[in-house]
Image (cartoon, rainbow, N blue to C red; front, side, top):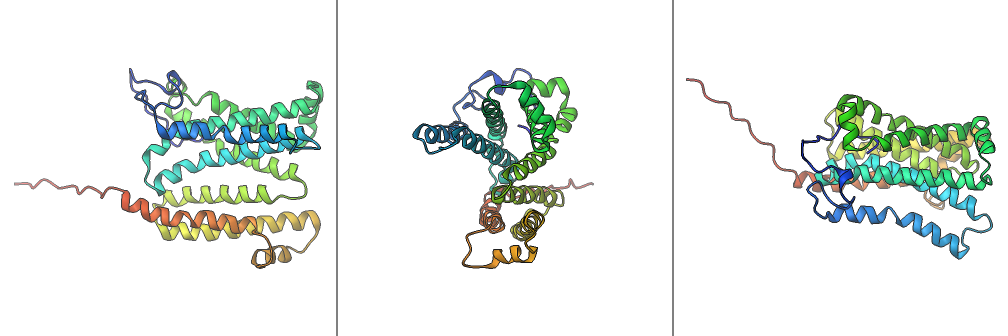
Length: 301
């Protein structure tokens, strides 16, 4: 869902995903993978609700819940974008079955995030509308919400048939721009500590880098390791540029923090670790992948 490279093929008489429980596969049978992912998508929301009930989000529980739901929406969106690369890296074709579900889950957290914002504004819709118009970070956040909602609504097999595969794919490729809007929104609303938006941006760059490598058929462990280094360096530069622009601290000092063993792990280091962790998975995936079939040319008399 949301960022499909290719529209799913819908055969006449086939069971569509909207006509059965989300934990079933297209043949109507229980899918352990889909059931597990479906249950996992509830965990962040339930955990946040538990924290609220226990008073762990005080003194401003609504504000804290607002930030948590927004952060989880962005994380799940990135996860939905990661499913296609992961399917190739680990050679797990069935992983594609949960892509739409993960995207819809991200949309659900975005809607809750916006609902909490309305609640935080005392349900004053005129004030909500004026804030969205006057505050740039709210404007782009609202545009992203509208766009991702449109992708969620049109993510079903029925909409693929109505729109046609070509138009459907064009619409759903806008997820990349919408995710950029989400990242900018996260940066601007974070104000002081932008560690999480920087990390999310680094992971987004890594995902886009993988797509660029895939177009060139560079899917092996070495290109993946090079991507890890490149994405990590880009993350360092983004973090340094942001803090230097906001605080006036020399960007070289911020870069140096990434190489100080006494400092806590920086976003760029996490990006490096996450992407490098995919290298052994790629080696395993290559071993699991079937050998390419040899095409035998018919002998001519």
